[in-house]
Amino acid sequence: MPDEKGNLYLFEAIELRKEYDQRIKLLEQLLGGEQGKQDRFFRRSDEEKREPSADLDLSKTEENLKNIQTKRVKLNQLIQLANFESKIEYEGETIPIAEALELRKNLTSDLEAISQRVLDAAYTRIIHKEERDIVHEPRHGFKQSYEEFQNRLKKLRNLVIKIHQANHANCVSFKDE
Image (cartoon, rainbow, N blue to C red; front, side, top):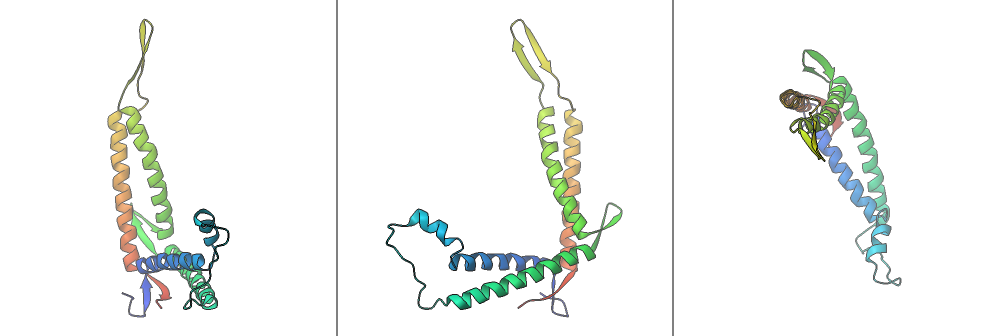
């Protein structure tokens, strides 16, 4: 649902960009971009030939593809511009959505590292060697690691909520077709 000026909200623009991506992918396949790869695997004989069906106009399809690609580039630029211009409040700071998206990516990768640390901290390793046992204590405490994991999850959730709210509140200067 566009705003009163007909511009798309950020979340709508992102969905439209995804739609453009799907259209572009299909049209490129129709025009033969990926078809060569598929034909090699599924071709029954070297004699087989493919011709466009009667209602497929390749020149119109190419023109349509170029138009959609151009629209996608323009839309993507406007989304990026809106991400830099739109700001959110996060942990007492005002940051652009673009920075929040980068922060989200970093928090997600941090979560993977911290979850491995939690797994490593959960158990003491005991190696049985001949007449003695070698005990390897975890480098990090389990409770501390798990608490840090929980805190990062909460930070990530709060950040995602703020980004989501901003995507529904800010517009992109792009009008839907």
